[in-house]
Image (tube, rainbow, N blue to C red):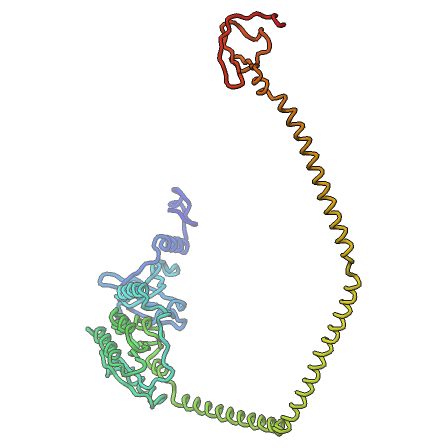
Length: 454
């Protein structure tokens, strides 16, 4: 091992240390090798200094160790331990250098056995949270005017007296229904849940208080029961939880529609003070009176104004008749003038149109004459074309090969269909075709004698 004051290697045994240096090195070694841990033991020699620091000894049957908890941590402990209490501390192992005493520097403290309870509390809380029992969207608003308030608590609880006193002082008009149940001890949780279910089934009250006074976590443990939380969630009316003091939290607080820091505060939240309701009613009555008076004054002024505007029906009819006659005159004038202008414009347009109309009689005669001449020209042209066509048909008839064939001639073609004009186009033993006037003859060529033309 090495440290700031211990040189490495074998030089440690040769170095001479002061006691302060030795204690400082030992303190650093302890703090480095022992992280924060939980230690259980019994309180002894507890001292609360004027500075707010706690000094005590933590012991068991076989050993003891000094411990200190400084004011910054002690103020969050939630309780002040006393001689003989069994506690669990979360501490850092260290050494008080001036005295060379090894001690525990305490960061947190709890009563012995509460660690398991708290762990069970957290696990159940997480489970019910996942199921949605603590969802803020599920919370119901309290009734604005509660006529009856139910209370689930012990008949012997001081919290019951506090709640009844607060209700009597603030809202004596509210009816109170008590559903007694033990608030701690064996079987208390089941009886609390049963009382809540009974209140829900009987439906006698507008809001239900579940309350008890402060105490240790063991005292309040009945309100951390799953059955109690589920009964609160299933209750037919809104539920206010007033369990313990302001720093105490139970599952009932999370399941309730509203959490109050104390039972008395729960009573104050459940019922609005009678004086507040009376003051509100008086204020509303004053507002209503002022509104009615203002409405009456406004209506009276409107009646006066309308009465000044009101005239005789006969005078009104005469006035409207004159207006109607005036409108009739204007309408007649407005209709007659455009009609007159339109008629004058039509007459002028007719005159201009007559002046500009063309003389079609001469043009029609010319057109008839032109049509006659065209018909005559077309007839002559057709006659001439017919004569020319007949002459051409005669010439064509003279040149018709069929007429030549009818005179005894024949048209000779070879095997390929070519017309034979010279002997050189034909060879012996070939077939040639003779096309006559009335048919075709296939003949074979025996010999070819060119040059015998007469």
